[in-house]
Length: 210
Image (cartoon, rainbow, N blue to C red; front, side):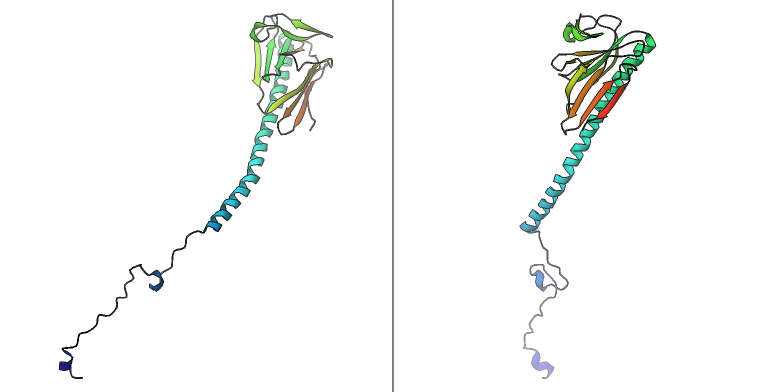
C-alpha cells in the first residue's frame, strides 16, 4: 500500500512491557512471594518445645549439683575451721548447725555459748547431752546452705537425733579430737551426702550415699 494511503489509518498503541507488579505471574523474571502456612508455624513451635523440654532439665540438674557441692564444701570447711582454731589457739571451738534455716556457724568458745535470740544451745560435754547457757565467743566461720538442700539427720556421738532442736552443737578440742558428728543432707534432686568427723583426728569425711 502506498504511504500516502496510510495517513488516515490510526495506529494502535503497542502494549507496554514494563511490569507494574499487579500481575506478578506475568512479569518476566518475577519470583512470587510465599508466606509461612499455619502448619509450618505449628511444626516450628513443636520443634522448639521439644528442644526446650530436653535442655531445661539438664540445666536445672546442673545448677542443683553445684548447690550440693557447695553445701558439702561449706560443711567440711566449717569442720576444718573449727578444728584448726581449736588446735592453734588451744581453745575449744564449737560448730553450730541450725536445721531450720540451714545456717552454719563456728564459734571460738572463749565464753559460754549463745543460742538464737540470746537463748540456750544444746550440745555434748563428754557423753552427756546438756543445755548450754546464754553467752558467746568470737565467730570464726559462718555459712548458709542452699534452699535446694535439706538436712535429713544430725547426730553427735551417735547418741541422739538432734534435728528437732533449734540448734545443734559439736565441739572441737585443742588436742585435735572432736565430737563424732554425723550430718545427712539431701538435695531436691535426690542426691544424698553424709558428712562425719573422726573423734580421734577431728577431720571431716564425706560419703556419697546416693
